[in-house]
Figure 1: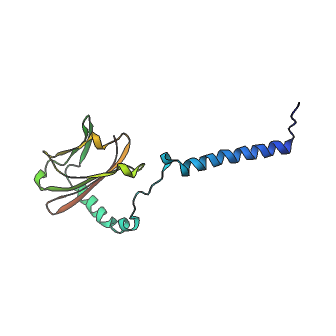
Figure 2 (figure 1 turned 135 degrees about the vertical axis):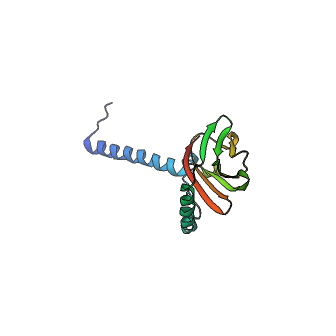
Figure 3 (figure 1 turned 120 degrees about the vertical axis):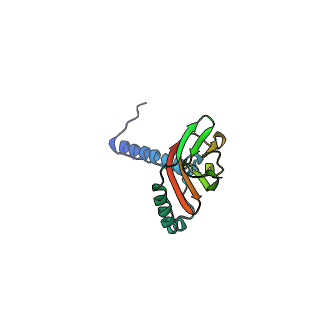
Length: 150
């Protein structure tokens, strides 16, 4: 028995297979949990209104003699604050944001030991993080933002 394939049938099969190919990607992007797409911020418009405060804090941080430094260690990420500022006067919060999964985001209060703070390896997974450190020393407010690979 011979199966004959004429050109209209071939075109129909080609279009049908292309549609199945595209629909499989649509299914993967919508229905599968590993491809979840999340907003960077739930309160986007409120964040936009507070943006001038962030700009002022970033400008204050530019006038420091030494910037905040991040270092990967075997125990996690070590955050070093400027040495010319008294560590007992520094307060604020450290926010680690993972753009690929908001369930991994976390915030830590600043608790320094000799100008440094360690973020434990237990809270971190390998990959790209957005690090925001909103801190005060005396009456001055500062903000540090960086993309960090752990």
